[in-house]
Image (cartoon, helix red, strand yellow):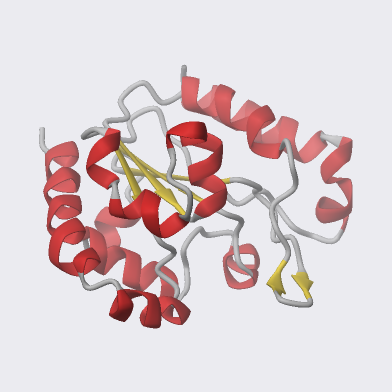
Amino acid sequence: MSSEAIASIRAAIVADPANRAFVDAGAQPVFTADPRARILVVGQSPGRQAQDNALPWSDASGARLRDWLGVDEPTFRAPETFAFLSMDFFYPGRGPNGDLPPRPGFAARWHPPILRSMPELRLTLLIGGYAQRHYLGRRGGASLTRTVRDFAEFGPAIVPLVHPSPRNTAWQQRNPWFAAELLPVLRERVAAALAP
């Protein structure tokens, strides 16, 4: 598939009546895809800042994610290196306990045609429980921590991660294996995926 095919998918998402309220409010679907992309990052939903900037991971969480991956901003943003999808491409709004969850069924409808347009993908990073449940199903652990702890079970092409939000600093402190064991492997896999 070509970049034109991805543009056509984006236009279909904008035209979908299920997304009308977001589009009428001035929002555009937040995702990045390119036929040359090597690494796919799948998250929950764009945050308010990402929605306002129309740029995935354009906040403190994105800065921490780049650090985890061992890449600089130009590499992170280059379309031939990274692609970014979420379980919903629109900021869902706030609820009583933080951001609302992604809409059910959104990823099931829109991810497959986008993924078919990216034949060069070598590595997929699943960030957070929603992405992990969608892509791993029963292969995932009983909890997000268990799934991330068992990252080696998913092979070299998939790495489950906790969200890089600064709010998860306490989780990292309680789980020192994340920095000691997972992050070095993650950086090796990212480097390998980006190698010629």
